[in-house]
Image (cartoon, rainbow, N blue to C red; front, top):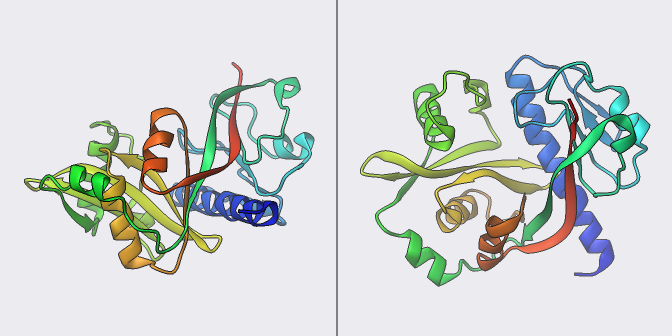
Length: 237
């Protein structure tokens, strides 16, 4: 992949991720905005684990990134999509670093991964609010404060569920935007099943996301390539 193509992939991945964050925020009644093609941000605190700003281009000025964010409440964070910001002077610290990943449309599913995962899992799309609550309980426990609202069950967003004996044990979110499919919130070591389901729905689209550590290694084994770094900054309390 040449540098021009790589940067185009990075921009599509960042835009896709911002579109997913936008959908989650709007499902919670927030009204985030896009600053042209450079930045997505929310002036009110976003749901837990979701950023208050996402850069969509390299070299966005740090002052512009933090200007519209809610700095007065705990948990304010920024997704530095090109790992080129320095927000330490604004009171932020790096929460984690990761790699954007890219898998071209039509890439074959590695047989070894598919065989390892095929131990009785049945895959389907979450269809209603009750199934969505069960999916989120499998994803992060049985808490009452739900991040994923039924308003997210709409065109372009799919909650994929891998079931064993009728119980959800694996899954992911697949969302379109930026001309690609973004995969996030993966759980249950489910890459093979998720990629099969994504390919069935959007065979013409590349797949993107971001991972780090062992999760990055698992994604690479399933045909993804790391294409560039990102950082998440958290406002120090």
